[in-house]
Every structure is written in structure tokens, then in C-alpha cells.
Length: 244
Image 1 (spheres, helix red, strand yellow):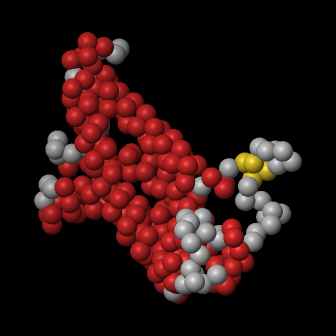
Image 2: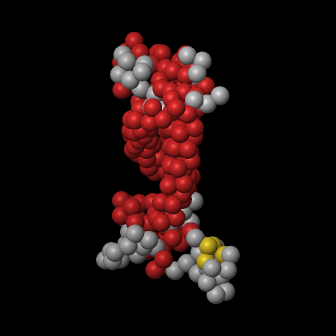
Image 3: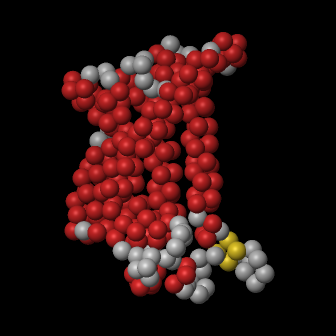
């Protein structure tokens, strides 16, 4: 039986733990994305390093979260680092694979057109390759965010200072109080869904060329359809002037 009165009395605690949950997840995803993006660029430019990177990240991904938290406690103590290091490590495999796949999906003729227009090195990366890789990069971010939001709850195992909404799950479990467990579990699930929907909206805003063209003669046809003409003018999605 759900104790609605208890829930009403703890709404302030819920809001505080919700913000803590978002804070812990945001740090992990942001740092994980920065590391993964750098590794992905390295792997795209130096193909021989892709296998070792994903192999090592895969080994880290297979380590149970509770075991990794326990192994870190003697080294970093009951600190924010202990909570964040496993969360960051678990994002790397997902993000590296999707980011590299995104860059690999950029058509070769687009890259040739970009080279012919004078784009070189970083300029081609930021203004041509990254915008076209964005759908797969964001897809990886969606998976990383949802999985990290779930894992943040496990950080409650290392102390009451962490866990976010997972604090209520652990406390409810300790006291055999289902209301408190649901008080943490349901908002955590809703948070994951909300973040996922937000990222979908951001992706659609950032990649308008990937939307379905519903105009005359193009109903139900993606704007990036391979049958459409791809000219050199198409290779400036983040646009200013074409380099001299």
C-alpha cells in the first residue's frame, strides 16, 4: 500500500535528490563525451588504434558497478571521484562506437567535395564531418544518458551523500518500505524518458536535413535521400563562407 501522506511530506527531499541525480549524471556524461570524442577523432584518423580502444573500453564496461565502486573506496574514499569514475568509464564504449560510426557514415563524395572547396583538417572536421555525423553521435549520447541516469542510483551504495533518487530506493529497501522505493524509482524512470525525449528534440533541431521532406513530390522521403543531387554547395552545413 502506498503512503501518499509520507510522499507529500518528503517532496522537498525529492526535489533535492532529483537535482543531485541530474548533477551526477551530467558530470559523467560531459566528461565521458569529452574523452570519447577525443579518442574517436584519434581512431578515425589512425584506424589501427580503434580496436585497442574499444577492446579496453569493453573490458571496463563488463566490470560490475558495485565491484568497481568497492575497489575505488580504498583509493579515493567516499568522495565524488568514487561516484563519478565508474559512471564516466561506462559511457566511453557507447560513445566511442557511435561517434566513430557517425564519422564513417559521412559519404566519401561529400569529403571529396569538401577537399575540392578548400576545406582542410579541423575546418573540414567541424564544418562538414561533425554536422553529418551528428545523428549517430546524438544516438550514442541518448544511450549513454539513459544508462548513466540508471547507474547514478547505484552510487547510493557508497553512502547517503550520493545516489540521487537512488537514495530513496536504498532507504526503502533497508526499511522494507515500498512507498519510499517507488518514490525514488518512478521519478528516476521518468527522468530517463524526459532526457531521452529532450535529446531527440535537440537532434532534430541540429539536423534539419535529416527530416522527412513532406513537400510537393517529396512526401515521405528523407531530405538526405541518396537519389537527391549532392553538389558542392551542400557541403557547408555549419555555414559561413567557402574558404578561398
